[in-house]
Image 1 (spheres, rainbow, N blue to C red):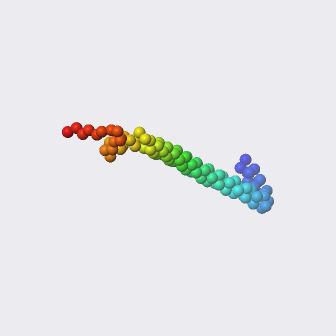
Image 2 (image 1 turned 90 degrees about the vertical axis):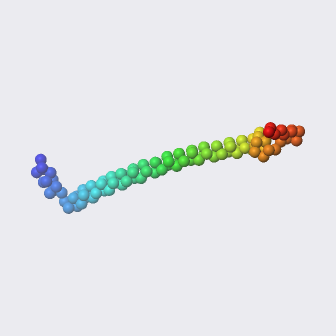
Image 3 (image 1 turned 90 degrees about the horizontal axis):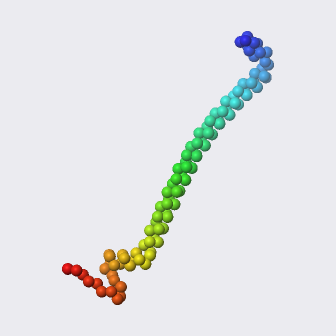
Length: 99
């Protein structure tokens, strides 16, 4: 069988040999390019997932900050803060200090 293959190769013209080798080289280059592009795509997908996670985390932090801002701008918080830390009171109230 090996003799049949070698005789077939010998029977091929120089042009046919060049075409066969070129086809093999082309297939190898296409395979290398495919492997390279798959690795680049996998790396890019990993980066996209990481950025999406960061985006969700930042959106959560923004929502928390907005909630805190809205709470601290509420009249109840402002009144409580003024009473506790600034020792302020309403106009009709009297302040008693226990000694």
